[in-house]
Length: 296
Image (cartoon, rainbow, N blue to C red):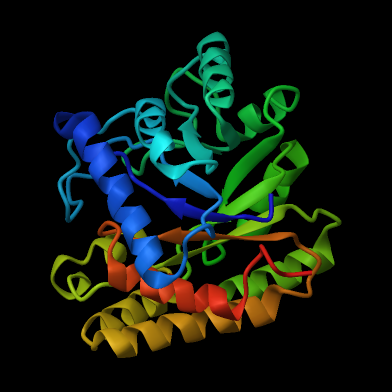
């Protein structure tokens, strides 16, 4: 795909289409103000499901992925869609119909994801993501899997997903350069060269109080993740100029480390607290350094 994808979380159901359009216009305004007009080629819309009760920002019922996409698509011109699809709650027939509908609506890639943290792998009446990757090879051309480079035994886990049919991996938000060592080792151990969507997130000052990003990347007992959480907490206390510099420097280290490993690369941008001009100013500076749209 070699794309730049912006993640947009569907709004609360009670906000309806009005709020969806408002969010999309805020994005287009922020793109214009930061010089990023025309650079976003895909919207990545996650399928939101309830998770742990300790989530720092309350999870209210969200607009369905497809309804949100249909509401905002006219605001973005020729921008295409990517999405995540939870597979654990739908049987094969129902999931097949869902995927067909998403593809017909303009979704170029679908990342199959599993159960929330409150459930164990294998729970639910539907399919495991690895089974979906194999089952839908003839239906979905771009089949994605989540890649968390700091997770224990992720080399084997991601390799198995590629064996099962994953054509791309979308990383968890990157707040260290652990992905460099991960992909370096992965390239030595396997012939698989899936496209990698490198995920970078903006850290606003509000993170120091709310700690949503800290919650999103948590993995108790994992020292690598603890270091990432400490990095996020440290820069959240700093000025915008300092936060931007730290995040752009991280972006540069990751790009420099993975650019020559043989993996097709895309960029996935996320503002967990919602789109804002500071976030897009930071994203614009990242893309000035390297963009999949201009890389050879």
